[in-house]
Length: 237
Image (cartoon, rainbow, N blue to C red; front, side, top):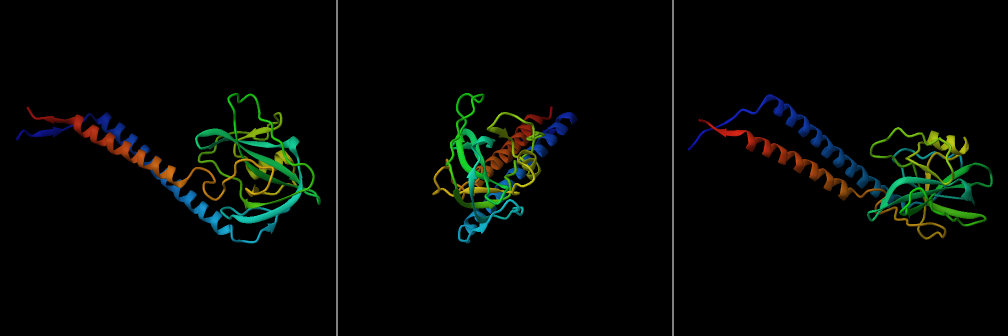
């Protein structure tokens, strides 16, 4: 049986190690994201049995905590936000965030659901809302976080409805003033005046998709290592 030697160039070893480390870290990141999403979904289900608390402009959503909430006021249709890069069943779109003006003063921002972006992103969609006094119940939670936060200034004044990229509480206050609640109220599905809403099953990307992406990164790593070994195994002369 012919003997084989394994003597790859040093630079190829460095390259494969670096690429493998990168892909493994991406796989681990996806696993962690999947676990976080699974935990988030369980919190939605646990909160669904709670009695709603009253949400005022002074309310602040604790990180990781999801509660039932309720409030009442008038929707301000002239100053709505569109949370960008939100997909539903593979269709790109926005989440519609509408400020609710409270009778006692202040604002609670309500997530009224998902709408498609349409073919021309330069043409913003028309976003109707119920007029008069409305009562809103739903899930009260912290503002959603992106998987990777980009350097975007959401305080830049642009025409309404304003397209935003995962604003922080400070940016909320920059947009609406100091008297805005520090969180988001996800409007219940059975309340009129909303759009596509499915909070308890997949608040953002489902955990299964994250685990699938993680498996792909680990498979890419294994494939790279196998190819590297096979290509550098040579028969001894």
